[in-house]
Image (cartoon, rainbow, N blue to C red):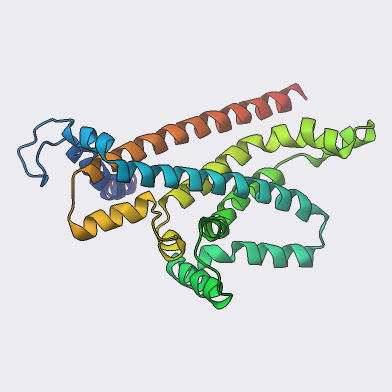
Length: 266
C-alpha cells in the first residue's frame, strides 16, 4: 500500500516538474505586465502585439512550411524503406537500420556543424534546400520507428491472399497495405513535423542570410531582451501541438478499433 502511494507521488512530482513551467509560461502570456510581475492582470495585449509583429509571423510561416515539407518527405521515405526492407537479407537490413537510426545518437549541434562544414567543403552556399535536407536527416528516424512498429504487427497473410486472388502489387498496396499503415504514416509525419518545427541547431547553421525560423527568432529575442510576445507565440504553438496530438490520437484509436473489430469477425 505504501509503495503504491510513493509510486503515485513520485509520478505526480515528475509531472509537476515537467508541466508546471509550461503552464506558467502560458498563463504569463495573458499577464499585462511586460516583466511577468505580479499581481496577475488579465490582458490580450501581447496577442495583439503578436498579430502586428510581421517578423515573428514570417518566421513562424517559414517554420511551418519547412516542417510540413520535412514531414511529407520523411513519411514517403520511411514508407518506402520499411516496405522495401522486407525483401532484403537480414545482414543488409541490419546495416541499413543502423545507418538510418544513427542521427538519433548524434547531438544536433554536431550534426548541424558537420553539415555546414560539408557544404563549405564543396563550396556551396547555404540555402533552404540544405536546411530541409538536414531536417529530414534528423527527423526520418522517428517516422521509421513508428512505421516499423506498425508494419511488424501487420498480418502478412492478407497481402499474400490478395496476391493469390490475382491482385497486382499496386492494388494490394492501395487496398490492403496503405489503409493498414495510414495511421502510422500520420503519426510518423506528425513526429517528424514537430522535430523539424522545434529544431534550432540545424536551422541556425544552415539557414541562408535574411531568412529565419521561429526557434531562431525566439532565441534572438531572448538574447537581446525578452518580450512577453514570446509567451504568446509559445502558447499558440502548444495549443496547436495539443490539437494535432488529439487528432493523431483519434486516428490511431479509430484504426485500433477497426483492427480489433476485424479480428473479432474472423
